[in-house]
Amino acid sequence: MFCAYFGDKMSGILQGEFKNNVWWLGHLVVDENFRGYKIGNVLTEAYIQKGLEMSCNLLQLWVIHNNEPAVNLYKKFGFSYFNRSTISLIQKT
Image (cartoon, rainbow, N blue to C red):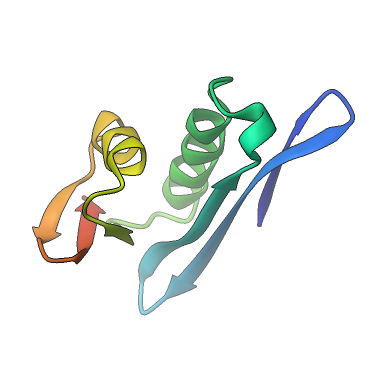
């Protein structure tokens, strides 16, 4: 689990899980009071870095297809659709 702080306030969390040689991003949540401060970027960077440290060749997550802020965040970090549906699997290799 990765936690982000803005000053002394917890502003976001990201939960990852290593399973079957895949580094899964389980949940990414940023407190609505801290949105717009790039906290999602920092947490996603930490998640990707941890995947590299574990020598993972596949990072995956599920995202609701119309959650544009989340989809745009993941695309910015090189994730692409593997399966596009209401809840889509996207991955980074």
